[in-house]
Amino acid sequence: MEVSTRKLDELNQAIWDSGFTTFTLSALSNIAQEVNHGTTLFERIPQAQQPGLSKGSSILTAAGIICRGCPGTESEVREIYHTDDLIGEGRIQEQLVEAWARIYGCWFEFPELYLSSLSEVKDYGTESVVYFDVDNFVVRKLISLKHYNVLRLALDRIIIHNAVFSDSAMKVLGFGRNEHQQFVVVIEQPYCAGTVVSEQERREFMYALGFEDAGSDYGMHLNFRTSSLYIGDLNDYNVIKGESGIHVIDADCRLNTPTLGCGGSYIIPHPHLDFSHPCAVI
Image (tube, helix red, strand yellow):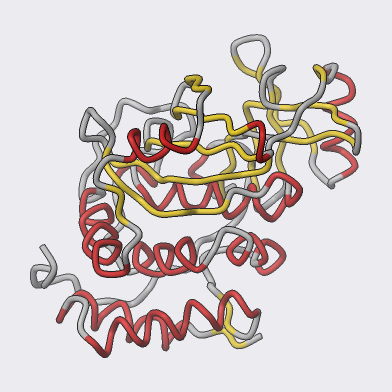
């Protein structure tokens, strides 16, 4: 697998300097395909979790590459539950991905209306609206950035989830803004039916995947870690025991960097880009 830091840097700089031209759109499509085929490394994510990109669609991979080439934000250097900080320059990620998604044809002007046309049952999570299409064994969601503040972290979450819990992988369909004008990721994943999984079973399930305890919060959310990954919020509603075993349908997944405050040591490689002038797209 080729480590393509220079190639990605050149693409991200070209997007920043010139926007989405014929050249940058073609290069983005080609590199996204290489990442999904496993011939090029998307170096932000640990190599063991690279399959989480292809399981999430070429849309996820392209959006991840675009967000890679945006300035760092205050929201990305904080302990995990300090959610009242500033977004900083995080809006740039949303603006760039929206501009690309409109060109690529994966921008949903009215995402609630679109998902309502496909599904009859609707439910609400803390950061998502869930649409159940039970007949077709599919769940579709509008995932906001409520718990992540910036799009880059929300995409990390999906990539890690797909890699660790591949049986319930989230396929990214596109992006949009909900009825409150908040940026959302539109996804679908397999519908899993089953029963509640006990706390001990949840622990043993995560231990078997190579994770160790990272404490709990609110008295019910179990959290786990490795040196490079953090997975939390494994409460009664997010883990289901079905006919084929245990399924994690929702979790708080992050890169376990030292600044996260969860005992991690993963260092995210930072691109070498020139942000001294305004982005051409904004």
